Image (cartoon, rainbow, N blue to C red; front, side, top):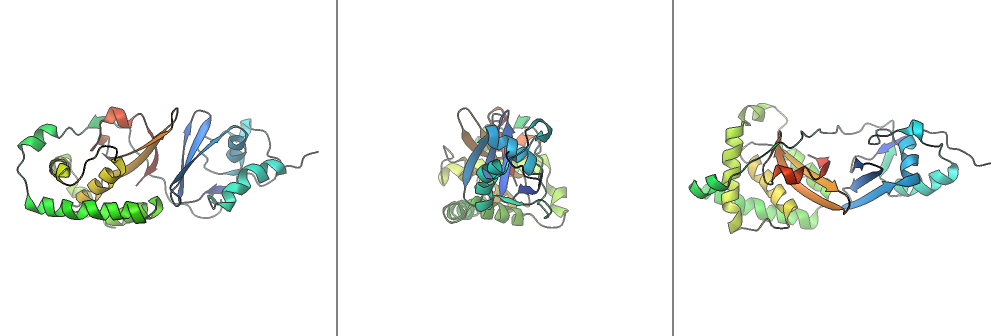
Length: 243
């Protein structure tokens, strides 16, 4: 007879691993290796039982995991350090509001004067972001973005929609002089986050995924407002990383 493992929910996802669910499939993002992994079928059933906090887990519907199943499905994730003991402290998961609006800055961009301070800021933010993307993994980038936000809450008083709009308009006006955002959503989003941080504005940086076919996308969001994309497009993706 097959032997069964007895350590149900003995693991959790490591802090650098993020997950979201699509029907009968779960997508994992390993931010240290900058790789995505799809989980489905028998492996999905095994992880539902053995990983606490598994997205939309329904372990009561799954069959018990055999020792062979453990070796097949869990050991590779443990070897890649994608799982951690369930009794260790995990990082809080940020909840993103459903995208409801887009910040359409096209008209304001054409009618706003240029500002040399903004140009100097952009000339610093864009190359720093390019260096980050070339030399750092997503885990280190996420840590860097988190450190831009001050520990105190004084910035929250300054983060009103009008100031956010003015700053995004300034960014959109200057962006074409430094780079194109076409097919560079990650570079664009990270540069925008750094630019806004210089004005003590701290929206969320988001990476989302979709399946059939698989694709990943990045955008910046303030509450329900998507700042550098059309919100209908952002809603096609399910957030897997929110910073």
